[in-house]
Image (cartoon, rainbow, N blue to C red; front, side, top):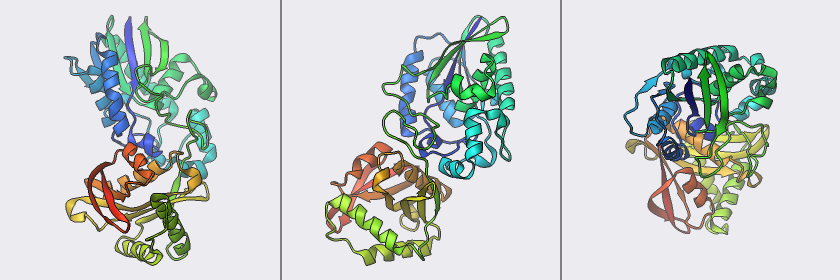
Length: 378
């Protein structure tokens, strides 16, 4: 008999930024890296003969944490990689939700009926995962091993070994959580599941990777955003109104707010880098604005978030971090090493930025006093 601990990787940027991750080689988030020591502790007393991993970085880092610095061989097996999502890869879930609601439902609830150009069939994922896991089990008869893989790949494998038909998958096979552990036994050529999706090693409920728009996540509702270029020709009034509201929220007053200066700044940024101002939408409703200054800090490899705004009714519902993620993806494409923003010390948004992973690196003068300069390493 072989005992296999099947582990999903730690939280990755696609999970946090609400993007279709697939085989894109996304990094772990700060929270994802913080989850790893708990995995190390969980497996510290478990005698593992080997650890196997998908070739994607998020899984390899998770596999290294499972090994925990012990003299345990770590093997990469390409068959453990995540499902390929084809033309969906790295698109916002909010975009997919609006453009392809029936396909999204099929993906979650009956994946045999799901297909987009360039994607990998659910049955193909099941076949390669089953082959990989069987080979691993047979190579380690009488021993215990761990495998680091991905949410949809794990779900496909579990549905296969449990004999769950595609149309019942959402009812009978969980979408396993980041760093969750599923224990399997392989005996006489047959897999059995001892337990699934166990996260008792973590100190708090883990982030749930997929949900319908508006489905409760246990704390607050989470909404998936989509994006389009902000229309400067028709959007002056909206941009200024949002900036004024953000100023009032940051300072408790509109004293010092200069509508002309804020709009001129937006026009200059857009002239220097067309498309640097993005409008966020929840389905077809306005949800926020992201304005980037792509010129400032360029010579030092830094990008600046000039303005980030979420409408009041969506604050606290996982929307702000999606805009941060959109900025991060843009600045990475431009080869920047970090992105920065300024925030007033009294601004309630400071806590959000700190939780998101921004750290204070200095101060600069603002209209009503010094502002904190916050940086996110890319």
